[in-house]
Each structure stands twice: as structure tokens, then as C-alpha cells.
Image 1 (cartoon, one colour):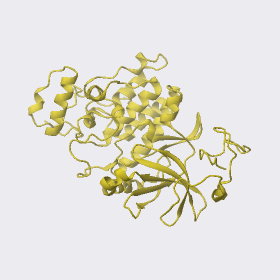
Image 2 (spheres, one colour; image 1 turned 90 degrees about the vertical axis):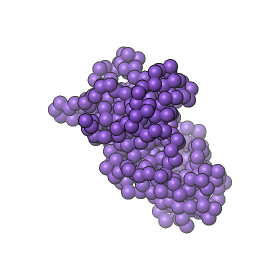
Image 3 (tube, one colour; image 1 turned 90 degrees about the horizontal axis):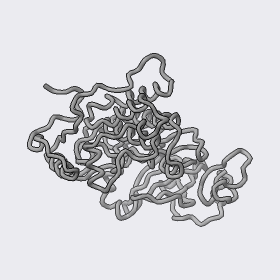
Length: 369
């Protein structure tokens, strides 16, 4: 059963009306009989018939569609024309990276292609529930155990991506979906690999373009520097902080916010929420260290630390990673050093000597020299 207005699924086996807007529910097998006009009459890949409109993001619109072979609902994401012509090849290539990710916590990509006007589209599994972003806008702070559980599932999904050589680069609450009833999810899905990149790949993002969402950007992203798997560890650390504390670790306008991610240590969560303890602090603050090599070595290590806090790992596991002092991000490229100098000035900090030096790779597994 599905709601023809909001397209959410049935709340309970006996429900006949949508608990969110009161609309009478329709049988999924009879999508063609739903009492509304299709938002965009179209058939994608000669298989997916658009039946309704779900919502709009910064770069794309999402439609409810029917898979005419299986008669099941799917979601079709169509990039806006203004974005599509400039980014079609890049986005389609990056989206294709996720097609080989068969993981229960990663949204399934069913199909992808281009319309006759070269506008890219992606067909995905249809999910019932809400984004973590929507949940946090309604309920700013979540119980610690639920925060850890959500973060663990996302870490598991990201570990699978990293194992395939894919870095997400935009881990944030709006890209995490809680499947199930509002406030009582039974599964977690990681969404939107549109900004993903294969490790070592170059040429898809121009130098000088900061990729990601400012509130969740790792220091290396704030200066448009080289990214890697530990970039996602930082982003997930910020998400965990936001869920548990009820506020972001850093606030401010554009440049000030970026400068804080680059330079300012976050306040320990336990100093803002008494319910949290030093063990929780250790996990979050390790993930959010400025220097990538000071974070957890892999997403699997972060996942293990989260599991240890949840009590789901036997034996003693280290909750932190080795720390090399000082924990200061040193930009890798000349352009990144230039941007870092601007951000140092924004917070009235003295620009270090590295501004005119060649820096080591910040994502190296071990320190050189």
C-alpha cells in the first residue's frame, strides 16, 4: 500500500489511510490507478513509467515511477537541465561507480541513462521513511545508542564503497535515509554518490572547486585539496557529533565555517551534553582530527570503534588511532596552500611557513622521514 499524495508506504498491516496526511492508501500493484496526474508523463529506459512527484534537491528532481516489468515502485532522479548539459558526462561516470556496490546499507541503483536532450537520470530503489536530515530538523538530538547504531550502519556502507575504491565525499544527514516509520527506523541507507570519486582518479573536478557540504567538510576539502577514504571518516564523525549533541561542531558564515573545519579543534561532545562520556568523545574526536593520517586508518577501524561503544565486539578494541603532533592540516597542492592562507587570515591566525613549501601527501599511511 502506498499514499498517492506523499508516496509513503503503509504504517501498519491494517492501516488504510496515510498517517502523515490522511490520504486513502492505494495498492502498490495498482499504481496506474492512483488518483493524481503524473508530474512528468514519461517512460525511462522503456521500463519505468513516471506516476508522481516526490521532491526536488539542489540539482535534481525525484519522481515516483512504476517498474512496468515488476509492477513495483521505484524512484527516478532527473538532473535539472541547467546542470545536466554541463555535468552529464561527469555525473553519469560517478553514478556508475555505485552500480557495483551491493550492500544492504547502500541505496540500489537499478538503471541510469540520458534522455534524448542528454539530461541524465538515475533509477533507484524506492524507500519509505525519512532522511536523517529531516529527523534531526524535527528532533535535533537523538539518543546516544541510536546515534551509534546509525553511524555504524553508515560506516559499514562506506567501508564497502572504500573496498571498491570509491570515496563518497558528501557524507551528511540529508544523504542518510532512515527506512521505516518516523522515529522508529528498521534500516539505514546511504544515498547520493553523485559526488563520489574513485580513489586516485583525476580530472572530474576542476582545481579550486570545493566538493561537499560546508558543514561536514573535512579540512582537506575546505581548501580543495586531495581527498581519500579518511575524508569520509571525518564527514561521518561530524554527522555523529551532530546527532549526539544536537548542534554542529562549528557554526559561521562561508569562509569562517571553512576556516574552523581547517583550524579549530571541536569542543568535546561530553562538554556540551552531560549524557555523553569520555569514550564517546574519543571516538568522535579521533574521526574529526585535522590531519587525515591521525584519523582512523580505515573506515573498518572506525566501524569497530563504534561497535565497541555499542558493546557488540568482544575483547578490548582501541577507540582511538595513533596521534602525530601537531594535529594540523598541511595543504598538499600550491592552490590549497593559497586558500589555506586566506582561511588562516579569516581567523586572524599567523600563516605558517609551509605556505611556501612542498607538503607531504596528507593521506599517506605513514609519516615520511
